[in-house]
Image (cartoon, rainbow, N blue to C red; front, side):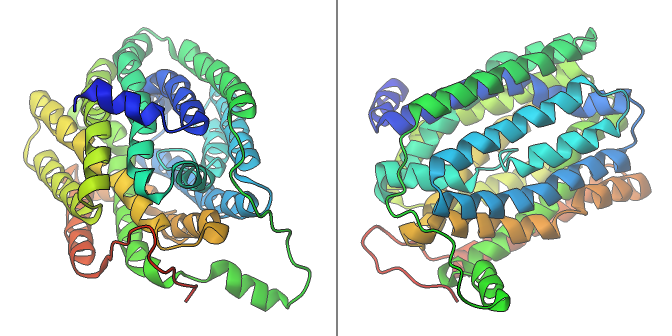
Length: 409
């Protein structure tokens, strides 16, 4: 079955998947440019790598709050309102970019973008909506088509973003992102159908301690994924989250080169996502989680050993394939361990603890770079990936639809 056949089959999964796919197309067409230029823009405003890391840390802190917040709201009031309001948070964050006169303005950007719980992560309300729209046996395919078409849109604009930035076109990029998020607010409001059947109102009974304990309890089946997520989030924050800044500051890459890297990454991810999603739905998700970690290990080794731009392009292609394998597999395994009435909150909690622990990671990564050089943060990431692969291989259990669900531990 070819790419177009897989695409037609996935888009037939329902109106919610089509609406989320259209939202991804709009978002990534605009943010394909933004991802490339925002770190170089901060450096142009006079920031240092540790200050850039501080902005990332603020984003991580508020992403932790947002993941828990939207997970709770989505389980009480519905998936759709949580998703729409999270997009409005993205819109507010972009206003700080347009008005920025120093790197300090990006603290506001980091706060609201993090609060949206949509920056290089999947909002827990979206995970729950997708799972309930198609059924657990098709989650991998559904998530894949959403991400695949989004990535295809991103690659079509990444190099353009690099070119515009090189010619002082940052304002055009930021404005286009604002217009895109305004359009997305309308698309989601009109195009998404609510999937939460039993809307539970917050209970008034019980002590504050009991409520907090229930709120922060960990689902037994998700414990290995917590470990993997903590290792991944902290090490990613120290390395990949500031990678473009590192490449500009240490290796002298320009925004056009960063745009090409982003294009290759997106092309690899976008073209492989739908076939990979279909394969993992048929052959199992755990295998693809391990393969994803293995590809990331190869990429980190390449970053550490080489400095040639051509090699970095090849590594970006490998990285794109690894991301295509990881995201839908991770979400499918996680959601399969949690009943529908707790699913969105459980996914939010699964993001929150790693994000809280990862708050200082970008700042630490910047300081490690200034003290020890370009390769130091990447070596830390490499060892974390090796540990994660071992945890997945030994402890992660894959479950299929129909298996009994476990309660909170």
